[in-house]
Amino acid sequence: MDINIELIREKLALKGIHGPSSNELRLYEDRLTRFFTREYQRYTDNPVSLPELGISTSEGPIMEDTDSLMEHHYDEDLNFFKSFLDTRYHAYSMAYYGESPVSIRKSDATLEEAQHAKFDLIARRAQIEGHERIFNIGCGFGSLESYLLKRFPKLEIVGITPSRVQVNYLRKRMNDPDDPLGSGRFTLIEGKFDQLPLNSSEQNSFNLVISVAVFEQVRNMSAALLKISDMLTPHGKTFHHFITSRRVIPQFLDPEKTRIGLYFPGGRAWPHDELARHTEHLDLIGHWFVNGLNYWRTLDEWHQRFWERVPYLYEHIFDSSAIAHWNNYFSLCKTVFAPMDGNFYGNSHYLFRARD
Ligand SMILES: C[S@@+](CC[C@H](N)C(=O)[O-])C[C@H]1O[C@@H](n2cnc3c(N)ncnc32)[C@H](O)[C@@H]1O
Image (cartoon, rainbow, N blue to C red; front, side, top):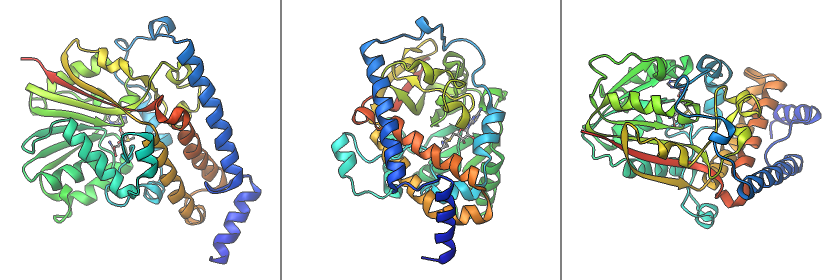
């Protein structure tokens, strides 16, 4: 190994910053996993409901703290995201390795293959046929767009993100005619979905409104689904994929109470049943819980890739406290998905249809 890389790793270790394969971090993650296992068991044995906690998903702004979320997370240096995301899609959401804990653990898929499998699953569950006009809330680095535009030559997609870093990245790709994003079938809106005024090109004009890893930021589900229903054509559909818990975990619903708010200002982990309850404006067609070990594996792969690039990040972008901050992020996220074989904390999928 390069002497410089060795020195950087030693320097970080002296500051208590250890990589994902180290004994130090393994012990720390084991302790945290045991802590979350106890918490999940506590709320499985003594369930609490959102009304008991005074929490309503039909009140308040659709989303909140987006500016802070951009500043503290999504507008971090592009090289940081490139250091760990899959090289094929740059997807910043859970990859799909399998349905059961055994198949997830046994899978020999690469991160790139597992991200592709995630988009296959979403396309199937969202019932995408290939001729649709789609609106993608929170398009990130264009991962879903890259997958759909390549697979379906007639499909059109509009993506929205408030992230300056993501927009700059996407605009460069849109200028490349060989890139699916440069095909002329992708339109980018720089802005916040919750603040977006619906003009005639958005009103009742989408066959599908979709989001992947965004509803964690939604506070008022009722208002979000009402806005979405205004965008759909008659019989149009809407599909959402986001992190959920099987039962209510009170502290995960207050971004100020845990580190969720540190990494994702305004973010929450909603219980699986909550969005499915919101049938005021749309009919629910189906909902699914996706085992959380899928996210455990995704995060572990991200963590390993990040750690490989740490010497580069330390030399060019981050100081040691930023390295510690993000190194801890991967450990923390891994350990919330690990307990109970991934059956308690994972992702959910929801499909709704517009009424006549
Ligand atoms: C976890 S990333 C997921 C990105 C992408 N969907 C994927 O799976 O690769 C969440 C995305 O939501 C976007 N986002 C956050 N708040 C938003 C808001 N108020 N309006 C629109 N997008 C938002 C972020 O900028 C980011 O692109």
